[in-house]
Length: 97
Length: 216
Picture: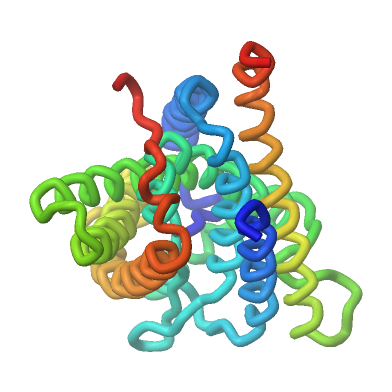
């Protein structure tokens, strides 16, 4: 049980991703300021799109597309940061072994 | 607070990219030396949680929303250097996969929400727990204050970058950014405190693990 704390935590993170369609769709602080102060038009589009705006492409149901984007991102980041931390400590663990 | 491309000029893009690259380099070196084996999965969990939590925009005044940055939580649990790495992972993934935050603005976004937010949160938390002792209450109060300051300060740096880039005069953009993020910071404070409370109730040992600092 104790050694699996991170598995439970990861499930909690995935649950958080699953409620993401409930999030407010209003512009965020910076976007609001850019709009009010008249410089939002300077923003350029990204040169390419993968899962733009946290909506998985090709799925008609937007809530589902958002949840899928959230789950993918959550898993990618768990893997990336875990992997990075694992790699960074590899040398030290080898030295101890 | 993810800056899109087009808001920053070349000089600001170059400066913030250089500072953030240096910061990440330092973080890689220090975290590699000091990260404990138990902390490896926590790095993954914090990155996953911060990504998921950032998707949850909460409404603040006047048709505006905000979302947590998460740097404060990471800095309190693992120290500022590990927090810089975690935030960099999140911001790089958001930029490359989700087109949130510009490619050229990535350095600035890592600087504001990674470096500025992590270090300011860490030192505010340290100061408050040093003044008030390491009890549960001071952890929660310190966490709230650290989270609020991290958002507020990151928004100030963001405003200065926008002003230096000529997107908007400082006298206009600074009060506007600071004002709205003073409110968003309250949300960051509440969520950070709630998670810290949960950690204290279930895995208090995580807070006792040595945080990663340079030196010491």
